[in-house]
Image (cartoon, rainbow, N blue to C red; front, top):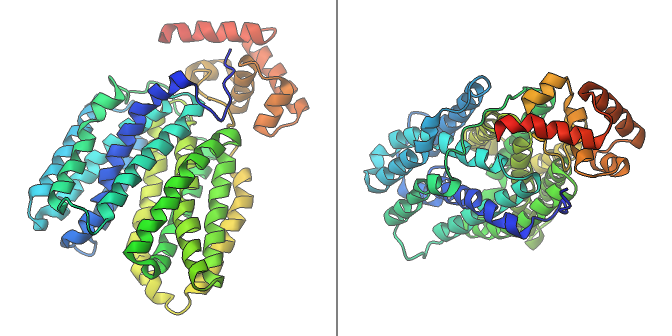
Length: 443
């Protein structure tokens, strides 16, 4: 019986988190520092690709590639060729480090495609972690990536940009060693439910609003302010992971939206140091409460994680691309009215915090893969019934299940009665025995 606290990870479990966390950190250190409008790319003065900058072209291709892989994996498991995605991404990164900058836009297009496979390999390995370990792996990886990004952003760092880009490009090369053998093959079934669509739409809107407002706020901060803003982001990552486990992904996402909203409103109303603190601490730092719970929520979908991550992260990347592409025009159109725009954005985000609970059902402390999707579908269990019985066989009382899922005890009791009838069992012990037999073929 699992008696682990939902907001902690067993000591023996930390070793299992390190591989996916390091893989996430090393991959995104390169993505953030080089192709995604990072400091190395910004200092290189790479030429544009038509109407798009090099960073915008990468973001567009990367987002479309994630979406394409997500759609593909709705019907088929992620191809085993993705085991080489990290090595190919590293090759593109090393070519960027030595090639003339005139080649960079075309190399970034190739890197955008292969990096999508690398991201899904890392994300799938995180989805295979225990429920309570996923936010911590995401937070550790994001922290490592931003530490390296902070170092790369320093104007006085001792390593020139080209060697620095080469060193960071070696990170994706380590993915197969950090993730273990074939973590990217997921054989479950993914159901594209309305709750998941609502989750993806919420993520897209949150990152689009944040990206557009960045174009108004960041010019006032400058490079020094942006680097300082990374520090509260890293400081809030453990709090975001802890919150996502203790109160759930839904609650943590609502706190992230509220933090951004408060940050925008304070920035609009305050003057002097208060405005900078709001922008750096709440706006830049507040994204920790979006990155961690959104990633964890995508991992919690069960079935085939590559599909949920491909569609979810693809939508987030397309929102980032839209913010990058529209940012300059947005800033020019609102010149002189930045404060009014920040107030409106803050109020919209506050409104979103009230709508989020009604958009999708939370899966608090529940690993939806407890019943394999094919077994769940064979018994005709709904997602909520699977959640309730999964918590029941873990030893939670009806009262604890009700508190966890935000239901009444009567509703929990009715869900269990219907579930037992569908499973043709008389209680929790027989349900656990049935679950064990269902998982035997997968062992």
